Image (cartoon, rainbow, N blue to C red):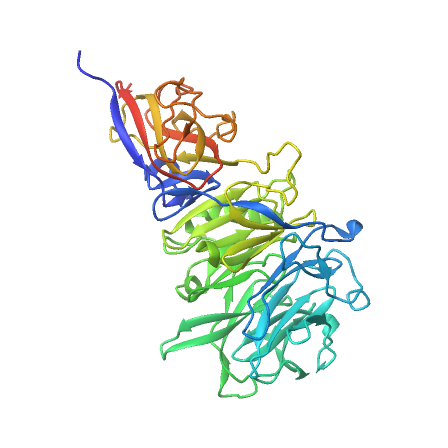
Length: 535
């Protein structure tokens, strides 16, 4: 009899998640979902794991526990690198892994520990004498300044024109420090190359067509037709976006507004925007939109194919609409990962979901099972603040590696991942297919455990069963049982198979669920199947 089993090889979907028209278009470069598998240049890669950096960072429990801001500082030659964590109790030095956190703020200055305390923004300023300063502000305790010469945080008493206690935003634009104040539509700026002195007010509110207060001021580097320039973009809480060009707001001819845009209500807090390369990304109830999109006339509710957020817009928009008023939102250029990340508040079911975009391959994946309250890059790694008062470092291949190993000697857990390919007709439109075998190919320095399953005709369920833990058992190649075996993949690729659930359909998708304890990349997946008729 002639052979009836056919083979289709699907490359790893480095285009990532596409929520726009994924079910019917058969584009196998994209996928339906990818949890803890992030698109990369060579395939889809299991995200890094995390280890404890410092623990027991104090908070005031009744006001809501947790590390709410991470402040990294890379020093100049005359000072030392620092890492700070902010809770509702103050700013802590957490620079050395395993050390006890050190409170750096005076409790008399940082007197308020309510819901808004610790959810702040920071900026680093290098003065003309090469001395570095960090400014931090939140909407409850106001402005604090760190001086590297004295290694101390304090509320500045040498700034006039605006109350330091009322400042909730700070940034630097063209050598000027700018401030925003709580429930105020006015910005305030210092003289160039100054960290103190009289702050001059500049009124933005009259140009906010939809009202609201000034939520933040952000730098945007762009070529406006006469060369590259840094614009200052004012964003209101109601969603107005106003880019300004110039260097001196006091000059009529040297400063001016260049446009007016609307993006919908911004997410809570001043972390609703981030510059990445020559673009500025903005996060609102409409989702994620960039300044280049706005210049092209893109409707923020309907990003086009050129928009960074186009593929995940339906997911993200639903998420922002439901949780827009919660603390914990941030959009951040995660340089250590070569990625743009959208950090979201913890969901009501306790789940953490982050949207991660690989810039080089234009692909989105999702992180989950990481207890992220806040995140930033320090050196070559991401650092995370958690709701239980810890700082974590993402530079290992397992999750939840403790500073003090458990007594059983098992320190950390495997990283769980899950993915579903796009539905495809396998090049034979209209014919029924029956899946026979799935063989995913992984490259890894350790063990990978995988369960694979066929899905038919647009069932997008996630595999419910959990494969055996890759860190507990290993099997011998060609001498183990299908559907139970697990192989070390330091030199071999892993193959896994399972039978489809419903039996057959005209379109087929392969779904995977597994875990790993080493750097792991999925390169491709072989699908063995046979075909029937069209009826």
